Length: 147
Image (tube, rainbow, N blue to C red; front, side, top):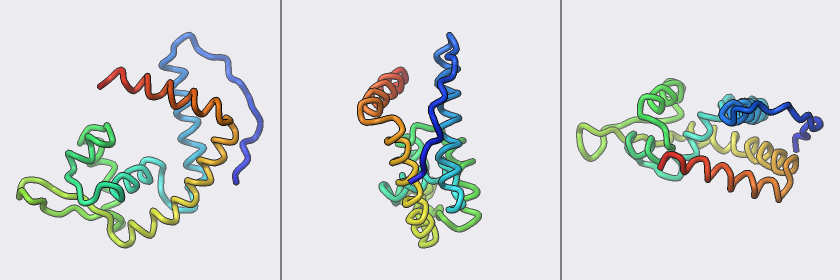
């Protein structure tokens, strides 16, 4: 398990948005350092994990579930399509597209999942049970700003 090196409280900004963005960047970098051997970014890992749970799924349904717009999803999917981790095929309606994991995508996800578990456990240990519970409550409350 990856140990988090110390606790270095930053001086918070009076702007809550800035504080959240700074924390988000730090957490993203933390996960990406641990995921690096898998070759996946945390956004790619999340996309593959969602696909695993939903496949086959239309691009619109996937974007809605991930709470991102279709343009962002399409941009994030392109490198995964290029390296053969996901496939996009015609859906039931010829105008729709369905996305699914390839065998290579399933393999990459399995490798990355072990590393993600390590990052998750390290962050959980760093924060502690009570702070993780508080964090999850606050993040859910903030997400509810946009239904």
